[in-house]
Image (cartoon, rainbow, N blue to C red; front, side, top):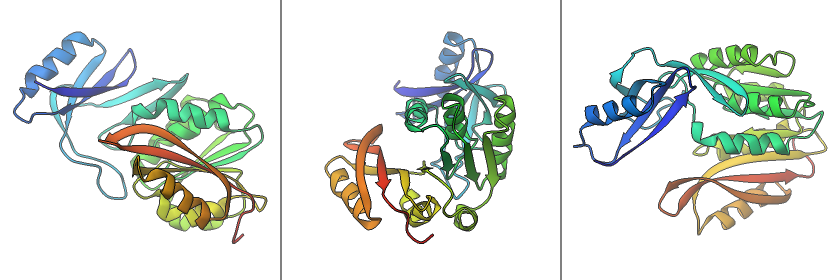
Length: 261
């Protein structure tokens, strides 16, 4: 019986999300083991689809436990209320979120595209207390609702500003306003790169672009991206494994001067 699982939530209440390597494995037995070993887990879910559509949600099946899968996930001294069945969230990106927060400088304006329940925005504002503002754009109304609640939970109403909108449409109102743009949507973010550049202040700034790429091709890909937008410099960071020799990477791109503002 081979499986892996993530636990999302807190010591008070969590859900476990199981991925079975062998579909013939006894999923109920797996769920029983998890519930027995992790007393804070009240629900065990199984992934039954990949992420789908613009809302970035996937389908889950409840194997055992409570059908109420809303939790308050705790990470990096932040509280994130969410329901994994209604809004995209990855607990595996905790280290990456902290890295972006550590890179953020005092008085910066930061834009998070595809912001979800606002984990990046919340962690940035919580750990860089002198940030000027963090704007988080999300198209999924349920994720946006949690983002608004998370701003309140973390008492960041004067720092974090969630917006319910399509990035394609809303960013046109935000051109020329930001020092830093994070784009945590690895399969599609590159399609919005020109918009991100235009959202930077005229003096330029930093873009954190996430991609999925084979390890033998990422250097070439990053170079193409940097050349396309006239970047001053770029760095490549390996974030998470995706498949054999393929990873989620972050390309940290420094743009000397924003174009099209």
